[in-house]
Length: 113
Image (cartoon, rainbow, N blue to C red; front, side):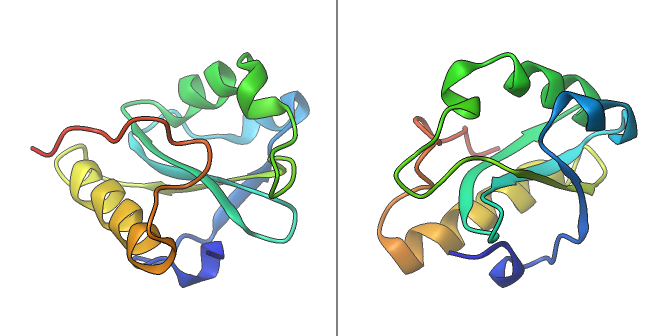
């Protein structure tokens, strides 16, 4: 699934490299790790996009190549903390409906609230 297929749309992005960390907002939101071509590898939510970006950069699994390619982009959507669960669940369900499974780097699905 390509990132541009997600609803709601996510347009803000930075390269998934340490030099881009300073450009990531500190607000809550949902995010997507994608390949250079925009193939969705991981969908997540957080109360701090800035902190979560750095945590993923510090995780070998998120930085190593997958069978779909290497995580290259960190797309993000700043959102109210009350909405992030709904947005993330929607994105995961969209991926599930197209591929029959969650993105390759999503090992467990988040709780529904």
